[in-house]
Structure formats: C-alpha cells, structure tokens
Amino acid sequence: MLSRTATPGRSVSRPEDRAGAILTVDLAALVENWRILKKRAQPGCDMGAVVKADAYGLGLGQVATALKLAGCNTFYVAHLDGAISLRQIIGPDPRIACLNGPNKGTERDHIAFRIMPVLSTPEHIKAWCAFALKEEVLHESIVQVDTGMNRLGLSEREFNGLIAEPDGFLGLHPQMLMSHLACADEAQHPMNRAQLVLFRTMLGAFRTRFPDAKASLANSGGVVLGHDWHFDYARPGVALYGVNPMHSGGQPMLPVVNLKARIIQVRRVDTPGRVGYGADASVREGAKIATVSMGYADGYLRALGSSGVGVLDGIKVPVLGRVSMDLTTYDVSNVPDSATLPGGFIDIISHVVTVNDVAKAAGTIGYEILTSLGNRFHRRYLPAPIARVGQI
Ligand SMILES: *Cc1c(COP(=O)(O)O)cnc(C)c1O
Image 1 (cartoon, protein in one colour):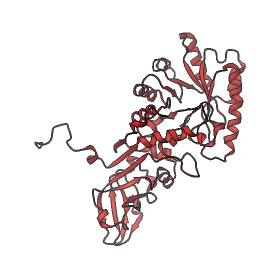
Image 2 (cartoon, protein in one colour):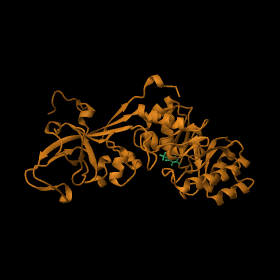
Image 3 (cartoon, protein in one colour):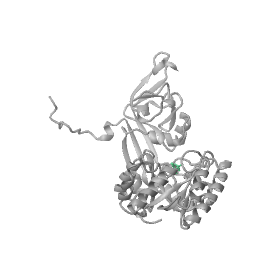
Image 4 (cartoon, protein in one colour):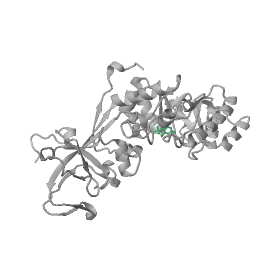
C-alpha cells in the first residue's frame, strides 16, 4: 500500500535531493564570455554563437535565450531539428545557420523556419539552386569552401569549376562564404595563415559573382588569432562555454560550468586491498575512500579511472580505481573526517579543476567533456543579470 504522504505518479522530494550530481550553468559568465569575444572582434564583425549539440551539452534553450537577450543575433547549429527548436526558442528575428547542410527533402522547412543552409558540396548547390529556381524563392544560404581541413566544403577545384560556369550558382542568394580552421587553437600553426590566404583568394573570386557576399572563417580560436581572421561573421562555440580556446597560454574565458557529485558512502579501509572493477588499484590500510553517485553513464569518462581529480573541502582528491557506470571512488584520506560525510559533495568541475583539466586527465578535449555531460544531473541555471540586458 502506498504511504498516505505519497501521491501516485508524483514524487514529493526535491529534484536536487534525488539527483546523484548537480550541474550549475552560469549564464552570466556565458554572456560575459560572449562580450569578451565581441570586444576582441574587429569593428563591424557580427559575433555569433555556435549552439550545436544542445549548446555543447549545456542546454540550448537557456543558452540561446541568454545570448539573444545580450544582443547575439546569429546562431549556428549542426542539424535541422536543432535549428527548428532554436527558431521556436528565439523567435523570428535572429539568423540561424544549419552547418551540416540541407538533407534532400528538407528545403521547405528551411524556408518555413527561416534557416540558412550551409551548402558544402556540388550536390548541395545544385539541389538548392534547382529548388530556388523552381519555387522562385530568394532564400539566404551560406556557401562553404574547404581551405585545408578536408572535412566539409567545396574543394578549390569544385569551387573554381562552379565559378567558371556561367550558371554555376544560378538561383543562389548567398549571405556569406565560409570556411573552417583546422588548427585555430595553436596560434603559431602555419595552417592558420595558409587557410587565411586561400580563403581570401576564394572570397575574391566569389565576389566577382556576388559582390555583396559576406565572409566567415573564425571559430573561438580564430577570434583569438586576430583581426585578419575575423571577416564579417565570427562563429565561436567552445570559448562561450568557458573552455580555453587556445592550446597554450592564459585562459581568457570565465568558467561557466560547475559539477558536483554526491558522496553516498565513505569507508575507512581496515586492511590493505583493492578498489573497484578489475581490482587494479591498491589501497593501504587506514586510507579513506568516498564513493560518489556519478559514473561514466553521466559522461564522467571511464578514461578518468585513476587519473581524474575532484576537490573536497579545498583539497584535491584523486579518483581511485576504475570509473563505474553510476559510481566513482575517490581517495579522500587527506580530507578531515568532518568534511567526508555521506550527503556531502565532491566538486568534479570547478574553478580549481576546470573543464580543460578534466579533459587533459581523460586524454581528450573540453568539447568532449561538455558534450558528454549526462542528462541525469539536476541542472541549475544562474541567470544573466537583467540590468545588462540590451547593453552591448
Ligand atoms: C563547431 C564549429 C564552430 C565552433 O567551433 P569552436 O572551436 O567551438 O569555437 C565554428 N564553425 C564550425 C563550422 C563548426 O563546426
């Protein structure tokens, strides 16, 4: 029989009390990061925001709304479904670009939701031009060229072929030519200049056909590289979310993410032994282990086994043994007993151990840590200050 205090089908406890870990997203810091990038940009450069993959795992709705209120007017997503959700979130005015291009049969949705497709292949161009001519629509699009990454975009040969054909781009109404940098996170990498030079050449050719076409090359790293890379539209992603956009050098961004995991058991080890699956970590007598309610199913990657670090009571505590699906064990031997109590929290991502630090320990990049963040966390959003809304 159900207790009288329980309503069938409805929980009565607070979500933060049920969750194993709490993720806090600081929207004020996010907005400040956007402003920091905007201040670095050359005058007239439109500072957009890449919000693909659910805004790098932090929540498309909250992130896009905060950035829009701060004055961001151009958003980039990967897929059409993301673009359609975003249109419903931010209303009719801001530009939305869909980076992965228009799949066959989706043209009408681009028109209906005013989404700019990024056209990256001769097939994209051909299909989009045919659609535009047949339906007599003047709909803005983006042409992407490849300048050395060999991932997405017209090759130099394909691009020059289309330029040489009198009807190569017939029916197209391009807003901009874009390309993507392969090594923008390494300031000294020769690819940055090489891609810039080729992009300028292709842009020159494109403007013989479309004199008003704008241009876009910079991701987060590209914004930091300098004005040469900025052109008309900048497309930062990761830096907005507090990840250092450069491989080395100072961190110019404010931290946006805080993650803390709940301690559910603390044990003092009586006899020397082993910890976790595979029993491959050893533990000495008298050591103290805290087990938290978070594991690789929450995006705390298994690669963090015996390499991750948390913070408890201001003291760094290493992961001991393998990360399990829903549990992770930390060596908290150096933390006073008063601070190692079940119900307490270990900071997993914080000012002390940043997204970049977690990524490094896992042998990956901040992007993967953010986009892996699980959906079981209780999520808290710290609002951007209202007083600043509208001021840029
Ligand atoms: C993801 C992406 C960006 C944003 O890159 P960051 O390194 O996160 O700033 C910009 N442009 C394109 C085409 C992308 O795919």
